[in-house]
Image (cartoon, rainbow, N blue to C red):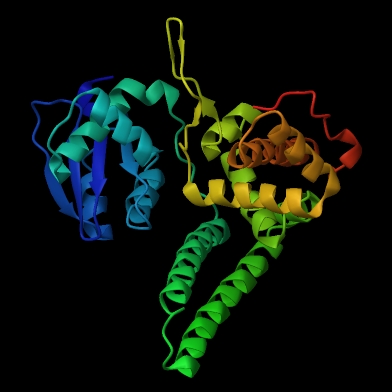
Amino acid sequence: MQSSDFIGIDVAKATLEIATADATSPTQTITNDRTAISTWLATLPATAQLALESTGRYHELAVELAGGRGLRVYLVNPRALHHYAKAVHRGAKTDRLDARLIARYLAHEHAQLRPYTPPSAAVQELLRLQRRRAQLMVTLTSLRQSLADLDVCRREQRDALQGLRKLVAAVDARSAELLAAEPARADLAQRLATIPGFGPLNSRHYATLLPRLAPPRLSALISYVGLDPRPRDSGTFRGQRKLSKHGPAETRRLSYLAAMAAARYDDDWKNLKDQLIARGRSTTEAFCILARRLLRIAYALYRDGGVYDPAKLAPEGGQTT
């Protein structure tokens, strides 16, 4: 393939900045609307491959239209691009340079990337609701903390907080309704709910994620979530392992909260946590290890069917990292 076939797109609310991996070709800016994108896509060869960062929902129209023309599209993890920019010693940052960087990344890494497959309309709405719910919870927590020492307008404070809680409840109700309309995902959510620590929120989240991601193996799921410990070794030096934190922060947060809930309310998981701490693990490390174990079980239920069986919980003498 020619370098001009690899196209990077930097997405903004109103515009798309477009560049190819051919550094001699100029970038171009088009309006982020259906007419402009369709007109530009019509000029591309069938061999063109496009890469974009996932930016809220502003990238969705370009992805939809490119997919409709049969072009291969990749959604690139912003964290991977950040590290790639550091690796190639990029200094300045502009929309044009970002588009060029995405194109360059695609040209060099496309064999390791997975093309994007658009989800159904229901799943798209589920994903949007999950993102908005996470934002609502951040807002609710921040507002509650900021109002904690305000002694006036107590009724208005309660009304504001209650309004946000009602909105969260409405989002949850709509999410449950959408999931119920997808029988396979609804069944998976019911089975995931049998896992300690997996309440309705985690069950819905992973019932949406797992069929969408379709990880070929457990390690791919753990890596996607960003709960994989990365070694920092060189020669005889053995550095401290840290989580890659490569994937979506909300998925990682929910997994960690599930581990905390499992260790609080289930005796088997509490014993696992206590054994890890007795071995010298910090509390945070213990919960991260439990979160990976929970993901292992969720993946097994997704892949093989069935429900959680506590008798199959591996003894703590097994793998703990």
